[in-house]
Image (cartoon, rainbow, N blue to C red):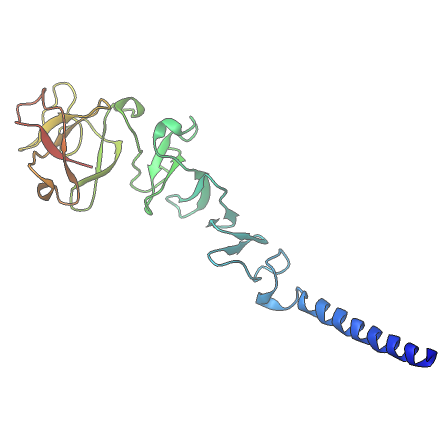
Length: 216
């Protein structure tokens, strides 16, 4: 009986060794792309939507960096990519990066002036802009789709019309509740405004009939 028990014990010990060996093999980090992403294995696997950056799985890759929550990737005029603070208006940005620049993908980030090609700084009111003009951004067709960005006070379509500045052509100088005054096309419904909207504005300081004009 004792001999039989010894044989059974030996049999189960062999099974345990085999199972342990198989387990070690399944965690072998040298197995290529099926292994975890590490500095030693930069081609390792990450979850869907992630990229291996500097040995870590990253949801927001930016060159050799991984942007943290609250940051977005910015490409400067030279093509260099860095992470920068996300924003919706320039009033949220620090003095060293005062412009809440609109990016090509629709996001916006705090940058120094002139960092982004064709840079436009987001704003909510005229005090956020060096020239005192905050007006709707236009699309490629010239429709005022927003967001509001800093622009010149020159009376051109969807630029500002403060002081003695008058609007060109048939555009009217309108005002909104945030203190912005800009040149807009009068309208009766959304179909007059392309991709924008026919909104109610303050027409009290313009010769145009009101109260509706095109805006975001």
